[in-house]
Each structure stands twice: as structure tokens, then as C-alpha cells.
Length: 221
Image 1 (cartoon, one colour):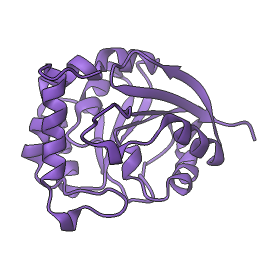
Image 2 (tube, rainbow, N blue to C red; image 1 turned 180 degrees about the vertical axis):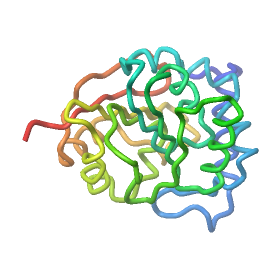
Image 3 (spheres, rainbow, N blue to C red; image 1 turned 45 degrees about the vertical axis):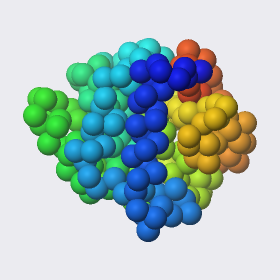
Image 4 (cartoon, rainbow, N blue to C red; image 1 turned 90 degrees about the vertical axis):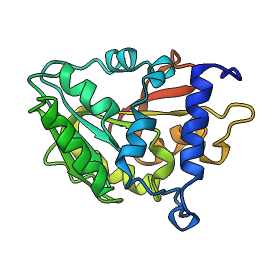
């Protein structure tokens, strides 16, 4: 749980302030906000303080990737996870997918600047990530509540998962006094929606202090 003056609390407040500062016209019923100011969002998403509670090394380790894994980071933003994963799968491929053109351009330039030839930045659509092929792992971090028809979307993206592929969902728990309480989706609801979409729970991790971490696989037909 966040403490009033902890670095994690300050960063969460910063993220909340950034979201809440978005003009009202940009906040739609499916929780979309304006992510076109990539420099602003990079300062938020890539803030070093985030590592304290996001624990990216442990998250990536829990995904059990191989050097040849193909991974899709859905809602990749400025590349917090996509960049790290690309370094971990040197013979694999990482697809950073975002619906915001400015984010797509930002990540493409960042990947080139950091010499990550195995990273591809893709402009997806709200109903389709537009991946070029199947992947071993699909990752969604703080993205779930942005999806409109979640069950429909999750059914649609199954075609991009390898038969033994996995879908990992990480999002914030509903903590007392949460500044983004309306953006939370309870894990039990996610599990129910994934079941309706044709998935089954494969693993559940509890090492993230402020987030749940669920991994699903396509259910046997």
C-alpha cells in the first residue's frame, strides 16, 4: 500500500494528475485520454521511480521468455516494457502496439536510437492490434480499462496467440483512497471476462505491491 510520502505514492499522484489534467473532450466512455504529448507521458511512464513498484525485471522473468520469443506489448506507450523485453529476446521479436500515432512514432525512434533492431512499433486499431503474425506472449500493462468491448477484443486477438501462447494482464488494485478508483477493474471481473472470451487462468503472481498480475492461456476447445 502506498504511504503518504513514499516515492511510489508521489509517482502515482503524478500519473493521476496527468490523466485528470487531460481536457474533458478527450475522456470518453471507454476511458480514452489524450496521449499525443509523448514528451509529457515519457516523463510519467519512464520515471525511474516507477521501477520501485512496477518491478520490471521480476515481471519479465515471470513471463518465462526465451531468447527467440515473439512478444506483443499492447498499449506500449513510450516503451517502458517493450524496450526492456527487446533486450531480453535478442533472437526474438517485440511488437510495441499503440493506437496513438505519436506514441508509435516515439517508440520507433526510441528503438532505433537504442539499437534494438528486433523491436517494431505498430499502430493498432481499437479492435485489432494488427500484428504481422502470431506471438508467444501478449502483454497488457494498465491497458485493460481502456478497451471498450473487452470480451469481443480478447476473442479477436486470440488468433495472434500461438497455440501455447499466453496473455499477461497487469493492472492496479483498488486501494483505499485510490486517486484513479474509477479506472480499476477487479481481478475477478477480468477472470470472468477472459473466460467468456475463451481463455483460462494459467498463473497468478502476487509480488507486485500495487498491481495484480494474471496470466491466461487459450482454453481447450
